[in-house]
Amino acid sequence: MSPRETEWVIIDGAPSSGKTTIVHALHTRGFRIIPEVARSLIDIELAKGRSLEHIRGELGSAIREEFQESLLSIYLQQFRNIDPEEFVIFDGALPHIDAYIALENTTPIPEVMEESQKYHFRQVFVFDPLPFEHDHVRVEDQQSALFLDQKIRSIYHELGYQPISVPVASVEERLGFVLAHLQCIFADHTSSFSARRSCRDATCARNGFPAFLHAGSQ
Figure 1 (cartoon, rainbow, N blue to C red):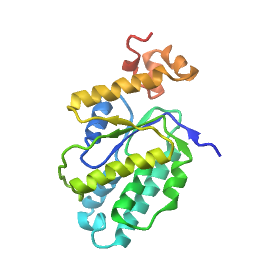
Figure 2 (figure 1 turned 90 degrees about the vertical axis):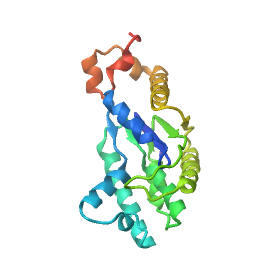
Figure 3 (figure 1 turned 45 degrees about the vertical axis):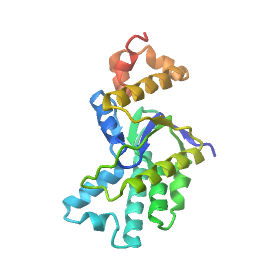
């Protein structure tokens, strides 16, 4: 069965790659974004009084597997509830769960790849890693981040994507790089995009497509 075509864009990368900074910047410019599932889940559990070590499973593989299963469940719920024709930017996505499974050497979850193959994302960006910085949810280190970077890329290649690598640069330069590619993505789109180009701002906003990308294209 062919995968379901979507207008979803994935911004992915290893921890401390700067992807979330750019996702937040895109959000301020009118894009609909879906926050990183793992970080959101960790913040919720921390608010309940659980320790980061317990949440991330440093106490044993069973807890790590429980965390990964929770991530899978949330991603599947998102995929089923979001309109595939809506232009949405995801901060990370279902396929990268397998990268963390490989890093942590826990039991594979076949559903990760099975479910990932049911959808075709409009485009995938993978951010090149930056020097590693710890924060309140990260338990990895620079070596782990480099491993995850390569694994994430290989997983998307395995799924048939040619991810766009976002090079190391300033926040403004990376944001401009991503915005330029988003414009190219839709300039090459089919007649459905041609219809969008003729829409007024209100229609563009209703479709989840930021009107500023139409500037100069009318």
